[in-house]
Amino acid sequence: MQSIFMLLLTSLISYVIYRSLGNVGRGKQDPLLIREQRKQYYYTQRQRAREYAREFDLTDEEIERRLDDELRMS
Image 1: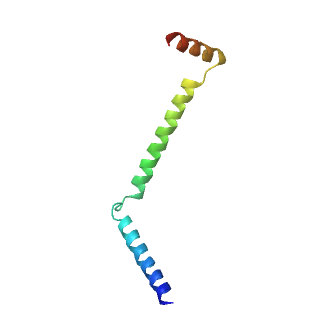
Image 2: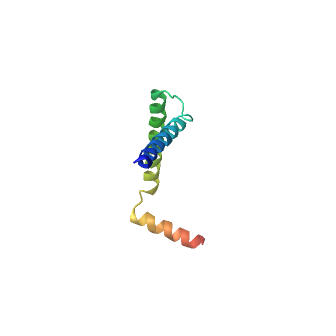
Image 3: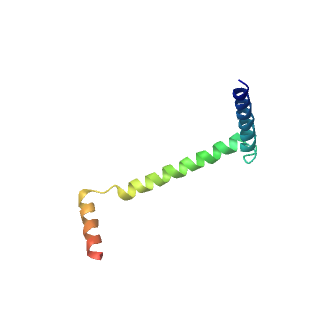
């Protein structure tokens, strides 16, 4: 019984130390700043997706032409 109690106690102590050290590097950041950074990231990703969609929205003829051009260059 004593060994189980000691195991639980050391586990609890380890967990508390782990959680306290995990928050040291993060610091206190403004939630509005974090929200703005994430919003900018998602807007950038959405813009990149639109650019890729425009670039690769090809008809079958355009695909065939690009393949022929790549084969000629190789």
